[in-house]
Image (cartoon, rainbow, N blue to C red; front, side, top):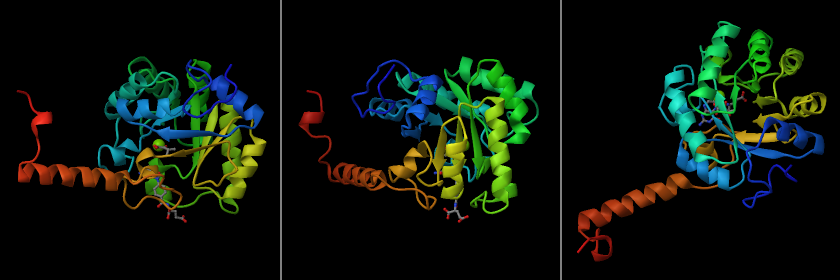
Length: 276
Ligand SMILES: Nc1nc(=O)c2c([nH]1)NC[C@@H]1CN(c3ccc(C(=O)N[C@@H](CCC(=O)O)C(=O)O)cc3)CN21
Ligand SMILES: CC(C)C(=O)C(=O)O
Ligand SMILES: [Mg+2]
């Protein structure tokens, strides 16, 4: 058993993080970070930085495939990215987002598609959006041995109904609470709370037996998640809850223009980067 889930880059344990480790961290009152990842190279960097949970988000729709929402992305588009992230990691628990339309129809449909992410792509768990309306799916998956992460609040796959707005304010808080309870009863190992008032997220975190993972939900949750390209400064017009920890967009843009200038002027490649 590791002493702490997150111990910086020199992690306390080399073995793969499990959902039981996350439950134990909640018991200890320990906070932990989660990031998205969509390829082997960045997954390895985050794994070596000690990030215990990596999410292959359907946000790949936006940041990898260039769609304007997560609605269009398919199982076939997400499977290879998930496989790359699994291959790039040794320690992180890899969670695969189930795309819109791949689980809503029935527990059988959820089972068929979730199974593909575990068997074909090496994911260790799946995530799906919604509360009471997907509780049967969650129960089917968890009782079959597939760990499920829930996702409530702003659920981007429902953008055509909800829009991109804070959820759970006022009266709507009671429905969100009921949904959270239904998901825990159905067996989720953790719950993402996206764009909900900080106070509601803090209360839910105290009430629920499983870890909460906030994104735009204040600092009262057990864990925090961000889309990695947002926190690293690669995306433009990121949501208001995003904090930029680097300016990779600036660094990459400069690398590209420096390379271009040296090619045009003929100074790259020099002798050091050529063969005799
Ligand atoms: N790059 C990226 N980052 C994300 O966090 C993200 C994605 N893509 N794609 C899938 C979803 C979509 N997400 C979004 C998209 C927009 C807002 C947004 O515009 N929020 C408003 C809230 C306004 C309000 O109700 O007060 C904002 O101004 O931040 C939030 C989350 C989060 N996810
Ligand atoms: C932002 C997280 C929670 C997500 O669902 C995604 O990246 O798709
Ligand atoms: Mg998602």
